[in-house]
Amino acid sequence: MGHKPDFRTISDFRKDHLELLPGLFKQVVQIAMKLGYASHGHVSTYGSKVKAKASKHKDLITGLLL
Image 1 (cartoon, rainbow, N blue to C red):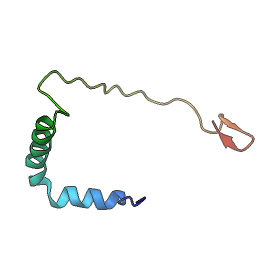
Image 2: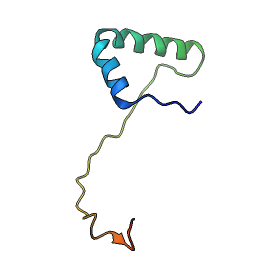
Image 3: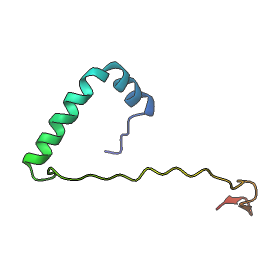
Image 4: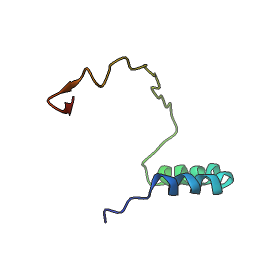
């Protein structure tokens, strides 16, 4: 418990097994549907990106970042 893979471990796995991931994703969705965790329907995602304009140095108060 408490073990987390390094980001590079996940990245390397994705690179090494890229061709298998679409099929794996499909299998996971099918299992989730059988178990009632997912269903066919409309899916929306929110993906707006906002450029940051704040200076981290201006937000520095008594040595702490806000």
